[in-house]
Image (cartoon, rainbow, N blue to C red):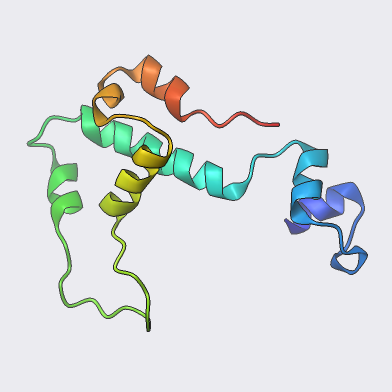
Length: 109
Protein backbone atom coordinates (compact mmCIF):
# COMPACT_ATOMS: atom_id res chain seq x y z
CA UNK A 1 0.00 0.00 0.00
CA UNK A 2 2.87 2.35 0.69
CA UNK A 3 3.95 2.26 -2.95
CA UNK A 4 0.40 2.82 -4.19
CA UNK A 5 0.01 5.79 -1.85
CA UNK A 6 3.29 7.20 -3.11
CA UNK A 7 2.10 6.80 -6.71
CA UNK A 8 -1.06 8.79 -5.90
CA UNK A 9 0.83 11.42 -3.95
CA UNK A 10 -0.88 10.64 -0.64
CA UNK A 11 0.56 9.87 2.78
CA UNK A 12 -1.06 8.17 5.77
CA UNK A 13 -1.59 11.62 7.26
CA UNK A 14 -3.96 12.44 4.38
CA UNK A 15 -6.31 9.75 5.74
CA UNK A 16 -7.34 8.41 2.34
CA UNK A 17 -8.87 4.92 2.49
CA UNK A 18 -6.99 1.98 1.00
CA UNK A 19 -9.98 1.10 -1.20
CA UNK A 20 -9.94 4.57 -2.72
CA UNK A 21 -6.21 4.31 -3.43
CA UNK A 22 -6.64 0.88 -5.06
CA UNK A 23 -9.50 2.17 -7.22
CA UNK A 24 -7.44 5.11 -8.44
CA UNK A 25 -4.44 2.97 -9.32
CA UNK A 26 -6.52 0.08 -10.68
CA UNK A 27 -5.24 -2.72 -8.47
CA UNK A 28 -7.30 -5.65 -7.17
CA UNK A 29 -7.52 -6.18 -3.39
CA UNK A 30 -4.66 -8.25 -1.97
CA UNK A 31 -7.07 -10.76 -0.39
CA UNK A 32 -8.48 -11.67 -3.81
CA UNK A 33 -5.00 -11.99 -5.29
CA UNK A 34 -3.93 -14.30 -2.45
CA UNK A 35 -6.95 -16.52 -3.09
CA UNK A 36 -6.18 -16.51 -6.81
CA UNK A 37 -2.60 -17.64 -6.23
CA UNK A 38 -3.64 -20.28 -3.72
CA UNK A 39 -6.20 -21.69 -6.18
CA UNK A 40 -3.71 -21.55 -9.04
CA UNK A 41 -1.30 -23.73 -7.03
CA UNK A 42 -4.19 -26.04 -6.14
CA UNK A 43 -4.90 -26.44 -9.86
CA UNK A 44 -1.29 -27.48 -10.48
CA UNK A 45 -1.52 -30.07 -7.71
CA UNK A 46 -4.84 -31.45 -8.96
CA UNK A 47 -3.44 -32.04 -12.45
CA UNK A 48 -0.45 -34.00 -11.15
CA UNK A 49 -0.58 -37.80 -10.93
CA UNK A 50 -1.32 -39.20 -7.45
CA UNK A 51 2.19 -40.64 -7.10
CA UNK A 52 3.82 -37.21 -7.59
CA UNK A 53 6.03 -36.00 -4.71
CA UNK A 54 3.86 -32.92 -4.19
CA UNK A 55 1.12 -35.15 -2.73
CA UNK A 56 3.34 -36.54 0.00
CA UNK A 57 4.26 -33.05 1.17
CA UNK A 58 0.71 -31.76 0.92
CA UNK A 59 -0.95 -34.56 2.82
CA UNK A 60 1.40 -34.50 5.82
CA UNK A 61 -0.06 -32.75 8.81
CA UNK A 62 2.08 -31.73 11.73
CA UNK A 63 0.24 -32.68 14.90
CA UNK A 64 2.50 -31.11 17.48
CA UNK A 65 2.81 -27.63 15.95
CA UNK A 66 2.20 -24.96 18.54
CA UNK A 67 -0.14 -22.26 17.32
CA UNK A 68 -0.76 -18.79 18.64
CA UNK A 69 -3.30 -18.23 21.35
CA UNK A 70 -6.94 -18.54 20.24
CA UNK A 71 -5.97 -19.08 16.62
CA UNK A 72 -8.04 -21.45 14.49
CA UNK A 73 -6.30 -24.54 13.19
CA UNK A 74 -6.72 -23.61 9.53
CA UNK A 75 -4.64 -25.70 7.16
CA UNK A 76 -3.84 -24.91 3.55
CA UNK A 77 -6.30 -27.54 2.37
CA UNK A 78 -9.08 -26.13 4.54
CA UNK A 79 -8.47 -22.65 3.22
CA UNK A 80 -8.59 -23.98 -0.36
CA UNK A 81 -11.89 -25.73 0.38
CA UNK A 82 -13.26 -22.48 1.78
CA UNK A 83 -12.04 -20.56 -1.28
CA UNK A 84 -13.61 -23.08 -3.66
CA UNK A 85 -16.91 -22.81 -1.81
CA UNK A 86 -16.82 -19.00 -1.69
CA UNK A 87 -16.04 -18.74 -5.40
CA UNK A 88 -18.48 -21.56 -6.36
CA UNK A 89 -15.82 -23.61 -8.16
CA UNK A 90 -15.54 -27.39 -8.22
CA UNK A 91 -12.31 -29.37 -7.86
CA UNK A 92 -12.98 -31.19 -11.12
CA UNK A 93 -12.76 -27.93 -13.06
CA UNK A 94 -9.01 -27.84 -12.30
CA UNK A 95 -8.43 -30.67 -14.77
CA UNK A 96 -9.29 -28.29 -17.64
CA UNK A 97 -6.52 -25.66 -17.59
CA UNK A 98 -8.31 -23.12 -19.74
CA UNK A 99 -11.56 -23.23 -17.79
CA UNK A 100 -9.66 -23.21 -14.48
CA UNK A 101 -7.65 -20.16 -15.49
CA UNK A 102 -10.84 -18.29 -16.39
CA UNK A 103 -12.57 -19.38 -13.18
CA UNK A 104 -9.85 -18.14 -10.83
CA UNK A 105 -8.96 -14.95 -12.71
CA UNK A 106 -9.26 -11.76 -10.65
CA UNK A 107 -9.84 -8.84 -13.00
CA UNK A 108 -8.01 -5.62 -12.32
CA UNK A 109 -10.50 -2.77 -11.80
